[in-house]
Length: 270
Ligand SMILES: Nc1ncnc2c1ncn2[C@@H]1O[C@H](COP(=O)(O)OP(=O)(O)OP(=O)(O)O)[C@@H](O)[C@H]1O
Image 1 (cartoon, protein in one colour):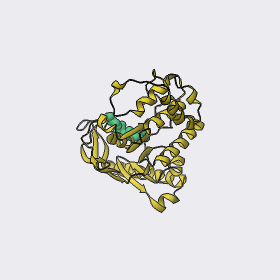
Image 2 (image 1 turned 90 degrees about the vertical axis):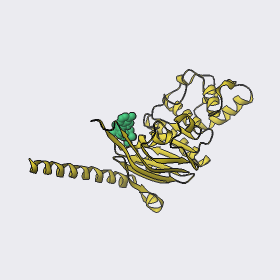
Image 3 (image 1 turned 120 degrees about the vertical axis):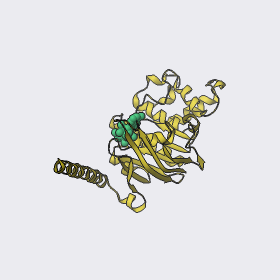
Image 4 (image 1 turned 60 degrees about the vertical axis):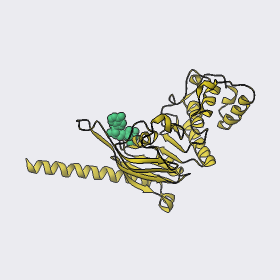
């Protein structure tokens, strides 16, 4: 269960570069909920994920995971509960270490690193069995450095590693945006299978309305640091990509109207 209560985050407060990235955002995700986050550029989607992961502390409000208030926990302490995959396939893995070594480290998240990375015998067999379902032939390349893999192969492994220990929360930030369409589809199928199989509570940011409609249980649309729409139940079940696009169009029209009104007001006062 993830509970976000009235969180706010302002970057560069009191300066000309001030950005109110999150304004009083509240969300409750019962355990096992797969939430898709969509929204206009700069609406606060990544900031929301960063706030939950502990990249920074929020200015106000509270965040709890599995009943524990983690609002003031540093990022490394939250990492035990949170698995994460970024847009950039080059983040999240150690490029000079082998596939096997990376996987062993993922399987030990939150435990001392001084244990050494012995990868032989049964451990190798277990690793092979875990990565075979990716259907990328990586089970025969356990000793290859991760840096030698393609972006899609790396992203599939990063996803596997992030979900290895069945985290309380999985955060996916546009994790297929840098992949070609075929590889993106493959990683999305894998995403669906892992989340369904392990019933992981998940927040996934995407700009693809198709992905938003095909995946998950609930869709939140953000705009200017706020949750503008929260589609659940029958409303979520009915929604189509074109419906979501028309909601974006509404936002754009309202923005245009607001700026025209502001212009008119400014003009009439000069
Ligand atoms: N570390 C930071 N310092 C200053 N401003 C930031 C920082 N992180 C985000 N912002 C600003 O906060 C706002 C929200 O950014 P965020 O990255 O959360 O948007 P987003 O919805 O993920 O956008 P996009 O869809 O374009 O990736 C933006 O105006 C962004 O420039």
